[in-house]
Image 1 (cartoon, one colour):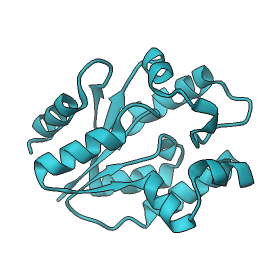
Image 2 (image 1 turned 30 degrees about the vertical axis):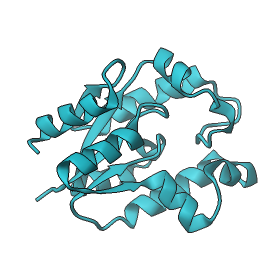
Image 3 (image 1 turned 180 degrees about the vertical axis):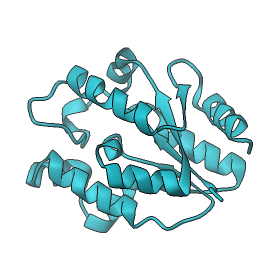
Image 4 (image 1 turned 90 degrees about the horizontal axis):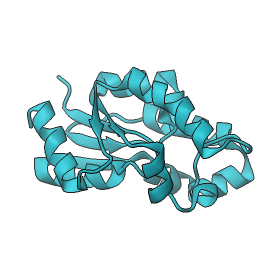
Length: 166
């Protein structure tokens, strides 16, 4: 029986905030894989990127996700979790995966510190290129997609819970 929920999407989609609200409303635990990485490595995501590169951060993210052995949790992933087939298969095996979809315009409005936020992207990759690249991956792995563009985060949490039957 699957009893976890995983939220995927672009930086700025609201995965962490919606995840916390959803967990609270449904009596579930909450895990943010970006925070797990930072705790376990004692560095910010940006420090990891500065010391190595985006592929190293993606590898660390994959390892942290593959270690997850939990029940009754909402999991908010980093935006780049979808680059790992193994990590996403693991998340699909332990949870319902929900894509919080927002437009490129919304990402621009919400992520003001794109170059310093710890986003796992190639050095010369633009936000537009990253957005396009990830959209098909999010859609590939999601059980369903929810529109995160206009609704308040509290409403998104209610919509997700309703859709899953919680």
